[in-house]
Length: 296
Image (tube, rainbow, N blue to C red; front, side):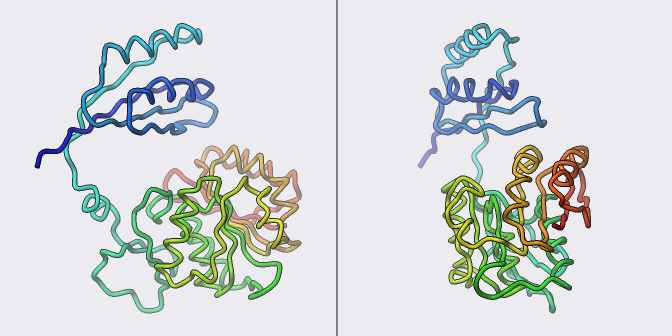
């Protein structure tokens, strides 16, 4: 049976105009997404659709929108994507990963789990976080180091929070290493769903409290504060913006693992947290990404 060919539409635009262009190309596509290429700079607007798009009409719409916004017309890329077995492809691109004592692997892994390691079963999915990204890897290394001296309560307040949980990988790591309940929150409902699936796959359904909401304003977050440990693998700008809320939710003497920032962005993030009385105690660079550990 023949398959309808998949096409890709892409263009790079200033951050302020990304939503408008996403809406413009989204009307011609089956799915559309936007990605930050540089903080405060350009964003990639990317869309996919089944069947060839009306390129002339699409180009015209982009040109009219650019003129209305008073910016140069962005270059529009339209290409036919080759057919791919995405399940096999994602598995091939996701080999087992070591990060400290954590061993992250998919359900396709047929090898043994290294002795003394902490197994985290996380399949490639629609939510971010399988351990291969530098920021996630750095977070896992930070958690491994903290686990050697940091104790978390097994009940009541003062436990752990995973802010912007994505796939739930950091919540899983904390729940397995410390054997404690973890509150996991994300603004994306799909991330919450994937976190719950991964919790079940790892036998941690009873320990992961996953809920959707607006960051620290989520009711479940307030219910279990203050926290001895907070993980937040998001982006540099929201990390800096949320620093005051982190301080209010972090127990005195507690630690926060912060990631999702490029090496060149760490000064800004560090200063934002220093302004809140949070002290830098460790930095873990992995490639172009840096993970920070701060303490209140």
